[in-house]
Length: 233
Image 1: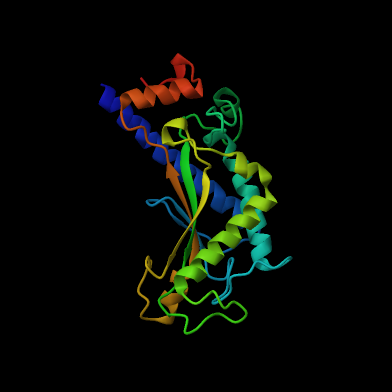
Image 2: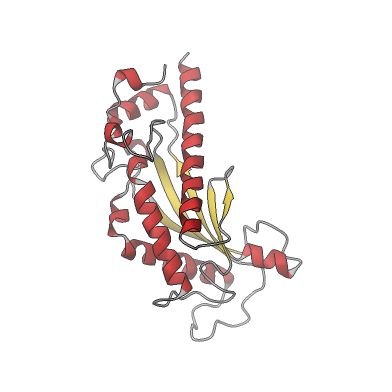
């Protein structure tokens, strides 16, 4: 019975992640950010080349398309995440009961462990370095600069995001983080120009908190403060 309850909860966690991803895409689209893609199975909101950065670009200049897109993404995250994250003190950022009264609720009691802003490139190596950036002499460094620039712009745009944390059992770390992979994680072949363009991207990857066992699941529900009548039966 305990195993069944835990499996049911994990299904609901995946449902909540899918719900968040679809809401984010809808929000971005209605604000004019086109070409956003979803990889539901892997929990990814994908920003292809041109949505933030063109080929070889890494800067986010004021009033640019990248600047506008990053700020819209920050607005979306600050609106959709409060019911699915914790505070630094290990309590829900927005109380469970009050979240169930909002349009974007969290009746699944599913919480986010981490959101990575991932930088990716194609496999065409930088010959020396990018113009005006002598330190950017590899695809890995380029992907890292893109990811960190996006992260900094988002966090500067919405200071609230720095207050979003994972559950205590996940280490109670800040939710938003950065990672970079260069050309090492292509989503399609680099043999043709179309494939290389697809591989040049920023991925926003959502990892959900999954209790390791039934006791950890019960501890999470107690931490959240869910009434017994609302707990999975």
